[in-house]
Image (cartoon, rainbow, N blue to C red; front, side, top):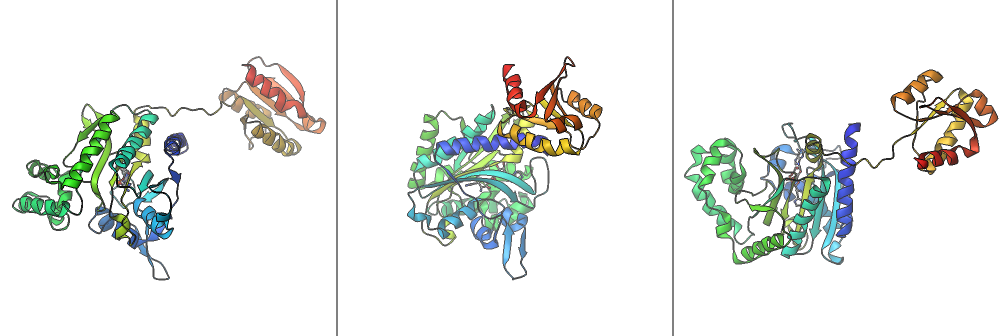
Length: 413
Ligand code: HAM
């Protein structure tokens, strides 16, 4: 909506300035991709692919999908454009609309916006740290105060399968107490039971084994380094052993950033991300470790509005109104507008209203001090009448001096 645009703009500006600082380059991937990019990439067992993806067959018979997230499209682009040959890591960011057929509710939409940052081609823990820090910085820059980072490690292809087995054994003996979704997850991806929000599953999972106790040496060392990095940066994080994230490609570090209130957290995560060392390979590329994160722009906007966090309106206040009367004046004022625009001076007008009184009323309602009256006589003789709305005093200015004089009047204040 028009009044929300300033928030979107503000978020984009924060993302742009932080990504620019850390040398992330903008990338834009197609909104419509081969469905396989996501069914393989996001993962066949995920809710996104199983229930939420908008997939359809084109007249030519291709199976395509509206992108439900950015990460697989970016990994696909990395492979297709041979980005292995660039200096690594390849650091990119993007922002745009995504589509998931979810049950609409506060902060959950079927078309929503994300900003997304990805670093491909580096396995070091400092990259995880940097991605977390940048995500946190963006929210801080927007004015969020009570935000917290939840972090966990879910292991890699060496320790994750082993932990899945332990977890399956634990949950299988308690299968009847799980919700129907989790009974299905038990077969497909038992890790997902850990982040189920259903009341009955919460109780069962409280006694479940924790992955942190079952990480292989490599994952353990990596996670330790990530936490040391966060300590060094003095970022407020908590270890959440139940955080597994709902996408199949994650390995090692996963994290989410949430807003904390007295009653716990609000409306789900603002940012979510993690490491995905196998995704590029899964999509047919080489072995390219990577890490990234995405923030829910609509959710952030909602929260900024609820918390009355005003996006700073650096836009210049409009102080001039141009009232036009008659065809000739309207035609000539087009050029005048262009001159004001070039001088970066905002000028309001009401093209559709013809009577001078209506136009002056409009200017009054907008709290405007200076009205430029451009009528039939003025247009013929190339001058303009300036009216001070506070005093009612009027004077004439030559048309070719109007911009210059108004510039002085505005700057004088
Ligand atoms: P995700 O957790 O699915 O991760 O989404 C990231 C963020 O997008 C969420 O934290 C939330 O703020 C927002 N979001 C998700 N679904 C909706 C929705 N239906 N309506 C409004 N906001 C929503 C990803 O998408 C991964 N690609 C993140 C990532 C990047 N991991 C590595 N790199």
